[in-house]
Length: 605
View 1: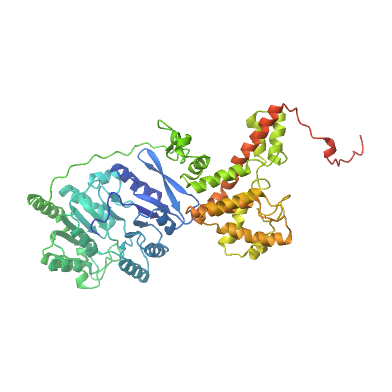
View 2 (view 1 turned 120 degrees about the vertical axis):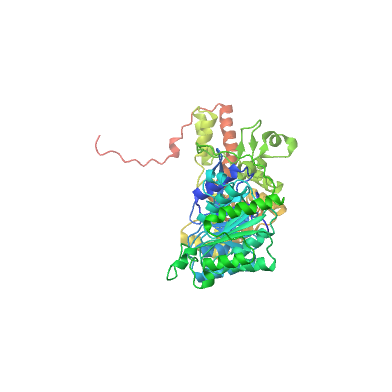
């Protein structure tokens, strides 16, 4: 791994730190990235499905997940995890990310103060898995013109002033995030900027150390020389010294260890970071600066001389033709005023020459020659993708099955009465639709919900019946007023035959049929009815299409199954409405002999 980040790198951001994410997206927009650098957010306590962010003047939606595994599954190419968890949970978050084999090549940990034992284990686990751990206690890193982590580099104005909007020639490695920004600015003033930069973190035990990053930069052709800013405490700089001495690092290195003033104190003093404290002479800044100079590393006489040393090395490399001239790219300006949109639409777009359904132009969907049916339109507008033919045919089968069930059911009755009152088609249709609910049509939702719950929790049919009994609930999808084992519902038979012929598998239907064997042994009309059959087969269909259990639960909870009943039954209601109008039927009044009156006479008149 030479270049740590590219313009294609995408990250999963753990913790919904909106200001840091917005800064990343503002950087993406400024440097003309084609896709946002943040693919998803993990926020375990959030109930939101997405967060809106600005991308220039427009807005984009970044999906939110409850855990890293689901986010990684949804975005398999996102190979960086930005761990913004607190020090209490940062270890667990990092270990979970490492455990997702092959997904993340880097995990950045911002939290400081992770206990030593956990930090050591986390760092070693990362090394064993080939995952680069940056941090703890870091602000991250940047590949100018490609990808930047969170707040590193500061504001957009400071980023452009420090030439962090495009790649330069220097590889920069520091412990400190604050001094990283200062060094980036110094390099921009005295040279052509940096090609890659990493702040490894201020804690005593960090994942990637100086040598890890410098060796990577040694193999990165965009890096022509390196700047290392070490500090008092620790022995990591000596690994760099040995790599230079042995020839593993051949590119020029400019280095300085801050904290030389420590020698004027009579006892050990910690300077800011947890690791910035010398416990032996070799850990002092002065000893490390001297040792680095002895192997040919460019070490200035003081920090104030560092800019001149950078300018000197840069000039020499330019004279040798190792560093060429950089063509400054065009950058986009972030709008000063941005307004958030009030509505969001993810299913259709009417802004172009032709409106689209989930990206498909209507003309490519509407004509018979294209092979699209009503099931395809539903899959596009309800689920935002085109289902395979067996699934769209099933949706159409459901609609045809539930379209009408005669004039006596409540919805049809309401629609007919309203039509006979002289109301228009829409009013009459609405009056029928408002009757759809838990007792009429809504049984599809509950059937799917409860049968799925039993199946998900490994209940046997007997255990499911006992569970529903304890809950005091009837089993939605079981029972019929007219049909029975001896007089089966042919609609149910047709749905089962279709599923057997075309569905990849039907485990929930099979479970429901096992339940039916028990219920019909008690009473022969306690059959799996059409609502129950539709509900369990919809779950089987979604599972076969690859949806997660959470996604399927979401479909059920939002009333998707009820919506299918609404679409189908609307056809029947309209048929009854038009029938009433065609027949010219008069105003309806219910016969009094069909009403049980139980009104007591008043004591006094």
